[in-house]
Image (tube, rainbow, N blue to C red; front, side):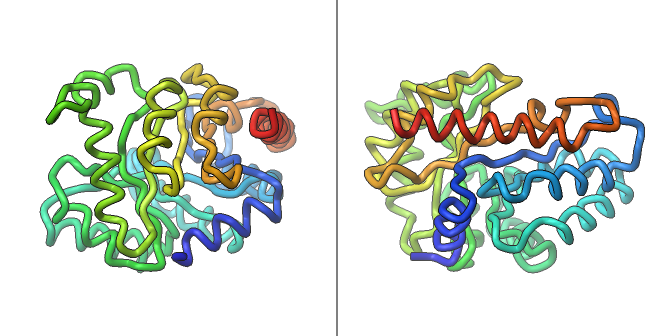
Amino acid sequence: MSAFLQKLEAATKRNDSMLCIGLDPDPKLMPEMPVAKFLCDIVEATKDLVCAYKPNFAFFEAMGLDGWRALQEVMRVMAKDVVTIADAKRGDIGNTSAAYAKATFEVWGFDVATVAPYMGYDSVQPFIDYKDKGVLILCRTSNPGSADFQNLNAGGRPLFEQVALKANEWNKHKNIGLVTGATHPDELKRVRELCPDLPLLIPGVGAQDGDLVASVKAGLDAKGGGIIVSSSREVLYASKGRDFAQASRKVAERLRAEIQQAAKA
């Protein structure tokens, strides 16, 4: 078992949680305050309720150097015993992907990276070669346009199923998982059937109206785990008042309980 999976299982058990909070800072939606303080306060208020945090690089990049500095501060306060997911959706020719992987894992110190597989194995391999890090490959994503390509027939199967099968094939270090959205629970169930042992990151809960209960039931592995259910805006922007951190905690507590109930149903 890779160090990534060991850390995920330990965090899930310790905090009794399969919840991941996505950190997507949008100054238009948050209270008027420094981004770093906003995110750090939410992390401090919720770190006993989650198995992972998922900073989305795009929102930090959009703020230029200030955004990267904010991410650096957030990385310092995230608990070392929960999983950190770099949601950057990387994937390029081999030498470029090698640089992306080094930046994600060595420079920033993330446990996991999200990776787009559509340029083939050589674009994913540099991430996989970090044996103790996690690689979450985009499979059946939560966005409305995902069916444009992911449902196209490819060799008698929809493309997302081919991606799932390739993930199994590439999983030589047992450090690969898949991104499968809560907005498509039937397809998520099919991915779990094809990949009974891979961890699944399930975004799309909350603002994207994904079906939490159906997705949890569809995604659980034989041991009753193996999923990371991610919510971003619903947790982050629970309040624009001075109580924003505690409001976020209340939403996180509710989501954790709903995930637990669905898993036991």
